[in-house]
Amino acid sequence: MVNLPPLVHRLIELALEEDLGSGDITTEALVDEREGQARIRTKESCVICGLGIAGAVFEKLDSSVQFLSLIEEGSLAESGSYLAELKGPLASLLTGERTALNFLQRMCGVASLSRQFADRAAGRVVILDSRKTVPGWRWLDKMAVRTGGCTNHRMGLYDGVLIKDNHISVCGGITEGVRRARMKIPHGMSIEVEVDSLDGLREALDARVEIIMLDNFSPDKVADAVQITGGSALLEISGGITLDNLEDYIQSGEVDYISTGFMTHSALSKDISMEIM
Image 1 (cartoon, one colour):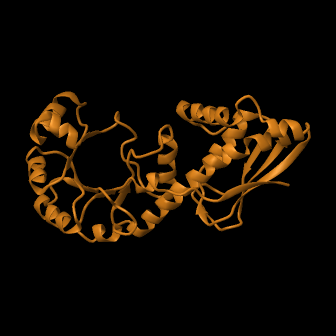
Image 2 (cartoon, rainbow, N blue to C red; image 1 turned 60 degrees about the horizontal axis):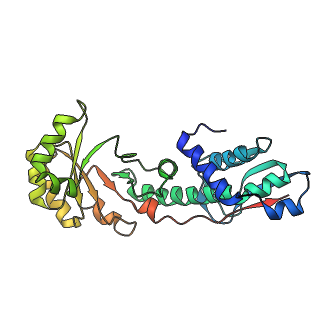
Image 3 (spheres, rainbow, N blue to C red; image 1 turned 90 degrees about the vertical axis):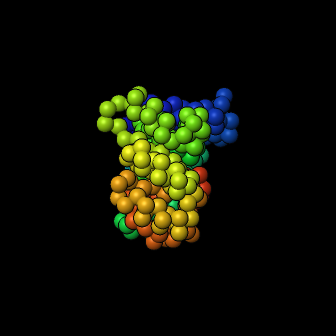
């Protein structure tokens, strides 16, 4: 089994429990103890991600199942390509089919959409994801983003300081929020502040934060922000970024990051199937 964090093992167990319940009534009624083989095939072009997770599903269900990947993670597979071969008890292959494919189809969907963002950015800016992931799927969604060629933002609330609008409201302003953060966070940890106006940008610059998130700025407003900042802080564009407007934001000025939840909250699962041979 691939090396997975405990949370993902629990997620696989939950997914199997959800589907299997008290037992696979159909398979138990129709299938004996024979061994068999199966192949997993994609019915559309996609970036491959999640074969190790699909294999882990079968490993969790029945350790006697052999799962062989036929293509490397991150590769672009054409429609009709075979992705994996399986050998083992036919009952186990049939029972694990849907759960394994559910993981694989979504992860390929996220990786494929992330690849589109990475290709359009073409190295001119770092494309970041967000925490807008399926609950429980954070690790897998972010793995798929990396596989597609983009970069992870914070994994969670525990590994980075990002002072957002509601934090600022509670603290009474950017300056006070930054002051409180600097008193509490580990030495050397960067502070990022979200701003929704040029006045907020100036306040964040005065507070000497390391990263400033320009939230829902228009491309023209981003250009103004780049000029005001003058390289004294890293700039991140966020809010409503899609494939359709990505180029407009890249052209708006020399920013360091563009973050978007679109890669995870709007990815469509890919059409992938398993066939008994």
